[in-house]
Image: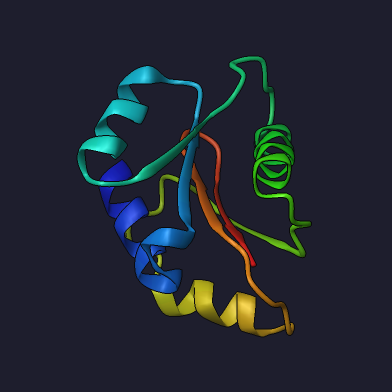
Length: 111
C-alpha cells in the first residue's frame, strides 16, 4: 500500500518533488528501494499534523525556502488519483514546492 500511495502521489508532481515522511526504518528502507526520497521524523507524534509540521520545518531548513502550502492525503489511500492532488494544488497559484508522503499519518503535497 505504501508503494501505491507513493507512486500515485509522485505521478501528480514528479519524483523530485515527492518525499515520504516516516519514523519507521522498515518503511524508509522500502521507499528508498523504489527510488523514493525519505524524511525521517520523530516517533513522538500523536497526530498527522505534528509529523507534517516537522517535515515542513526540516524541508524549509534544508532547502532554505519557505513552503507556501500543504495538501494532505492519507497514506493509506492507494487509489488516490494523481489528478486530485494536482487539482488541489492548482486551486491556488503557488510557485515551486515539494510533495511529501507521510506514512501511517498522511501524504503531504507541498506546493
